[in-house]
Image 1 (cartoon, rainbow, N blue to C red):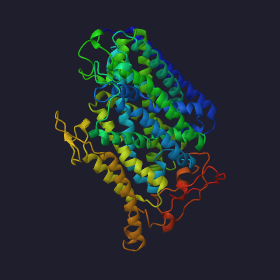
Image 2: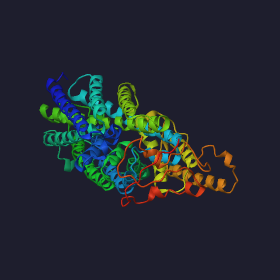
Image 3: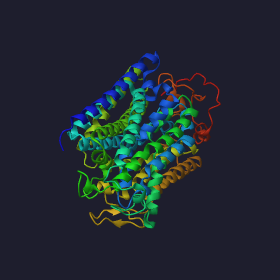
Image 4: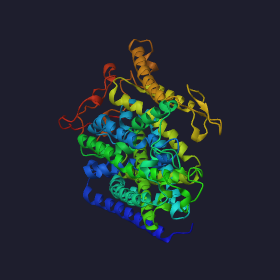
Length: 581
């Protein structure tokens, strides 16, 4: 395959358009924000992201390169098919659940990042521990999709993979650095439009290619491959449910999601954004499903690709760009490539900004430099955006198992962060001791279950497990990920109440409350709402009325009324006082 000048020109045009929109959004933000806090503008977009732009950016965060490529691959692969393409339905339900149950309490209380409620209830150190799996998830995801982008571009344009990854990462990092969430949001609008238009333009040309059999026939009849509708074997039902629940519940506790929720102008808008994004995810999956079905219905011997087919060559993850390359005219395939590139950048920029926001806000500012100036925090944000962008690029170029690392870290988000989020928002009385035990217990159960992508052998062989004949790694059919999540949740609740009971009864001396989580009358570790939103921190709108907590009595320690109350009808917040730290 030769070097394609036309394809390179098409990609340059797409990238320049996205870069222009990102810079324009940064300029527009700077002129419209006036004297507003630049930190709030970068992290949560000044809390004035409109309904249309908000819906587009939330949809684009999910509909990335992994989403459209992975959906097409699942439909194409024999013995899987559409029945195993869980992402479209799973993420759509995840957005609906997040909007109905999590968006309102998070937005109503004026948090800035997903980690704020953890530091409010469990303290600075526990917030730092929870930052680790959250950071791993964001960074490995960014690295994985950048790696996929390089491979995709090389299929159609035939340019060096490393160059395509570096240029893509530089563009995404640059406009994120100068414009923050505003640039990310407005470029997401352009990117989502490119994905929709690029893939839908490609489908008619691919489906009418002479080498393609009617996909309605191959859906239920074996022609070149097993029917692309697929099926779920009885032995795999529990594994299927485990993965499905991971997508639904594990798709909620991500900073990339809550960054959009917290940028909405009101709690009601945050809920509406989630519902609209769920519908958008379903719509955007349709062309990917059709392309996967087209690939499964193609006699590759009649194309320039030839035999063996992509599955025999272990190129199933590239089925979408392969269909664009060999079943569409050149000018159409180049346009589709631009759509894929746009999809990848729409996810990479979100992950980079999310990781940087959590570090600057929850680690640097709240844990170490609570009196840091606006200018200082803005520069920390910009530096970390650059560092995390460079790190994601390095992983995409160097790591051989970046997808395996992302699978493992996304499991940790589901098993560790999701139950902790349930506790801080909806369960009264959990404390730092229970949080630590739940964290460690969930981590142990997940690691002990093994990870085939990283060749990590299982320590616990759950019912139904079997050894992979290719490498001897145990594969689990038991839904151990969901069981680990439930075990982590129960450990948090049970240990929290047990510790509370033992301290109340005097069985354990108050002196042993070394985390200052139960008995301590005043703790620099546990952050109340005043600390999180004090005037020299980050200016927020629509705050719930709070009173500074200068002492903590035993009953109030275990009453999290604020977390479960409906705050939409609350009166205007009184002036907040600073808490001595």
